[in-house]
Length: 451
Ligand SMILES: Nc1ncnc2c1ncn2[C@@H]1O[C@H](COP(=O)(O)OP(=O)(O)OP(=O)(O)O)[C@@H](O)[C@H]1O
Ligand SMILES: [Mg+2]
Image 1 (cartoon, helix red, strand yellow):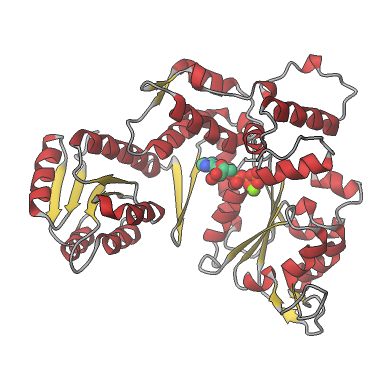
Image 2 (cartoon, helix red, strand yellow):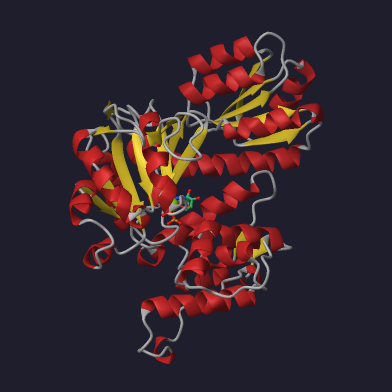
């Protein structure tokens, strides 16, 4: 690296800052020191830092305040928390607030250096724009990828974000639909207002109307009190209709009317309510097919689909795989010595079809990083669910419909995982919920629930 890394050490114990300054300078960093939180904030105001090492417990202004200030004013700088054993719970919270990692005192400098290197490597990805970083409140969203296909998706999303146009996001399971929905919301004028996600597939048909639009007290047997609908909660913000292809046919006219007029009545209500919510929806279903089958209203689809964003599957943008692997390795390992992927293992990943897309890749990397005993992740630690790996298509009877094929595959994966649904869902790269729905839908026989 050509430029010297600029580091700031904030700790009220002078012997710690003295020692760290010495050690860090020996390692080639340029180091500034602050012995209390207020001075730390002043220094952050006055200069850009690549790296901030931060003590949590300090008199007057504590580390949390300094962290908040740093993340607001220098979002690109990486913060590592130094903490005593008593503060581990707080330290864990700081990760959610954007700290890269925490290290307990007394620290071992070699370990600290590993963590610093990981943090700076992550920073390089962010600064080079290979990772788009978004921060909303205390949640972080990061979009990784440089393929033209993904870049196009991000461009369209950013272009449409400031408008109020309805956006329909389509793409395979685990491809990043929800992530893109957040990207749109956060880059819109509504970013400070709620982002309310509704999973249309997980709410029973009988409840979806009152979930969306609320109900008056006594509207039906279980309506013991008045309930606000999610549309009301999304007022001023964004309503994200996830798995919209599964929404009950019965509620579709009401949803259509709401999108057209911004008005609705609560279940059992007489008063016309008016709400201003931007609609983003997502589905992994072939929704045109649903329309043809008469399961989804065409007029509703038109309203939802003013702008269409199609997220390419991971196998259509394989060039993003190495970057994603690096990113997930850094993200999962943090303080541990960064494991590297061997060329042979990477080759396996590049050739695999990734039916569960990014979510599946993330799981595979996480597992491999845990299982790999050495510094390197070699092929034997890369557990790809054999069955879904580029099957020899000639051997699958062509008379099978897609649905039949899906059913058989789910049965096989369930069997292979001893009917453990959590593991099976992971292997399939779908959510547990989706797996439950599919088991029900296909009427798959499973022995007593094994979790
Ligand atoms: N480009 C990306 N960079 C980094 N992480 C990503 C990227 N795309 C997706 N992810 C991560 O992969 C996981 C799955 O993404 P997400 O939930 O957005 O997918 P989805 O399309 O909504 O999936 P599903 O159809 O199962 O609902 C999330 O943890 C998300 O943060
Ligand atoms: Mg989703």
